[in-house]
Length: 243
Image (cartoon, rainbow, N blue to C red; front, side):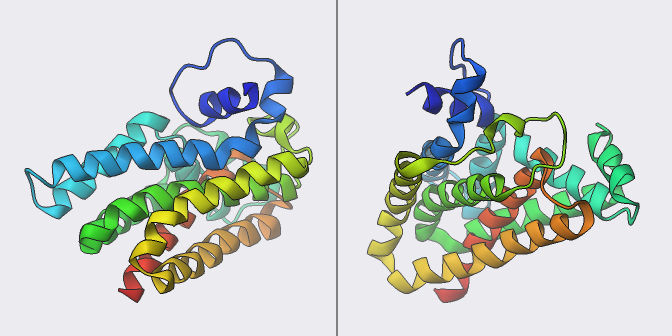
């Protein structure tokens, strides 16, 4: 379970105790499970908030809860990715831009639009939103783990450099189980909505990875964060399109 603790530390602001580099090498197998926990927390916030306020406020509070729990890790990656990739500069310079803690115009626009889309989609989903809030964080982090595994990781040092090894049968099984558990509630609502969510998730996440592959030759921690955020939004929009 040390790999699970490492995933929790890596993906959230929650404490996990003392961990080694070997523990973090096992962390990607548990990305989906951590996403499941985060999604459950967000769903509970949404359910509680909608008892007091309109759906749009409940959606905003659920999104804020996720950002608080993760420290905005993936949103920061999204903004940095769009700043770097959108700059049109050569790969080495684009990577430098992505390391810059300051947010540029490309990153600010992308972040604002994606957050607005996330809130709007959740508010429109109504009673289905809690199931989407559970499924989307888990599935988008599974895709993130697979993208990390597929690589290549283009930085000599960075958040994901020690996590690019094979997951193995146990690791893949843990990822698959997290995905199935995430989808379980949504399948009770509509199998077609579940499939539409996957159809929305995979192209957006895939296009982000393809963009990074063509511009940088691989992925970075920021790119992985962007894949997660776009995958989550894509899943929500896919489900909404089917309802």
